[in-house]
Image (cartoon, rainbow, N blue to C red):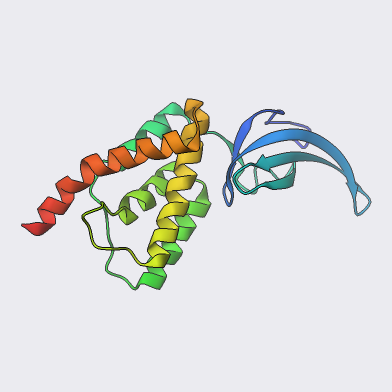
Length: 176
């Protein structure tokens, strides 16, 4: 990718791995430390945060366009599969979950959402499990909402509906 190639345009939704879905609100030219830089100015509404990313660093930090329809279908399909709960220490699992969320990969985020989901009739989650679940499901919902041109609340409801529909099948298996 050459330094002059602009991949994103003003108005585009983009995914910044550590922060989720944002929108390019401006292309800016700035002089920083004596160097002329072209910057993407990203706005993350949920966090009420603005981020400036040099255009030549966007690819390196993993900034990408919204996922393809195929990837979205794959991520939603993951929600219907059996949760994979490892028997390792929580601190290690929590680190793995955080890494998956911060990877920006929609399918990995869906895996975390599926693995940490608890139906209403399931045992309570710890505070940290609930926090990570909410971070993953929110990240998934924001990308789903941007792709389906809806809002995060509607997308979150869709995700929870899928999870509530399929989770009982696996909990029944455990009881046998």
